[in-house]
Length: 239
Image (tube, rainbow, N blue to C red):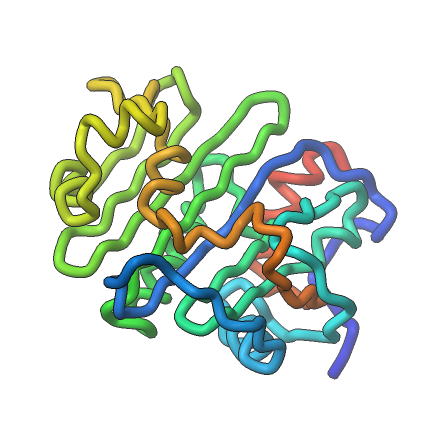
C-alpha cells in the first residue's frame, strides 16, 4: 500500500463549491410493507469501496459517520474521503469524484458498471455540484425498463435526457398524484424538472441519506488518475 496519488496540487489547497454526490443500490426483493435496514457491515463496505470504479485503492478506514452527517469539503485532502454504507440489501456510496461539469458523466459511468455487477438491482445515482453555477446529473435504473439519464445546467441548454421517463414512473408506481403530493415537478422542458426529487422518489423508503440512525464507513482512498483529474477540474479550478 502506498500513499502516492495523482494530485498535482498540495493537500491544503482550498476547495471551491459544494454539493451532494451519491449512488444507492437496492437489491431485490423490493416488496413488503417497508424496508428494515440491517446493521451496517464495515467489511462489506470496504469490499464495495475497493471495487468501485473511481477508487484506485482504499488506504484506510478512518471512522464511522451517520448517513445524515454531511461531508465537509474544505481542502483538497477532504476529496480523498468517501463514505460507504451496507445495510443488508441496501448499498450506498458518497464520493466527491462523482461531481461533473457536463463533460465526463461519471454518475452514468459508475451506475452502468454497477448495473452489470448487480443485475436486477434498482440503482439511483445523483450528483449536484454548485461552483458558482449548479450542474446536475441523475441516473435511475429500474429493472425491466430503459435506464433514465438526466444531465445539464438547470435552466440552460443543451440538456441531456435519455431513456423512457413514463416507463420509469409506471414501473415505480409514481402517479401524477404522488408527484403533486411530494412536490416533485416534472416539466415538459427537462431543464426545469426536479430530477433530484424524482431520484429521491425512486428510492422511496429505501433512501438511506439523511438518516441519523444509519452508520456508514468513512474511507481514505486514492482515486484513479482520471477521477482525480476530474475532481481537480471541478473542485479546484483556481489551483
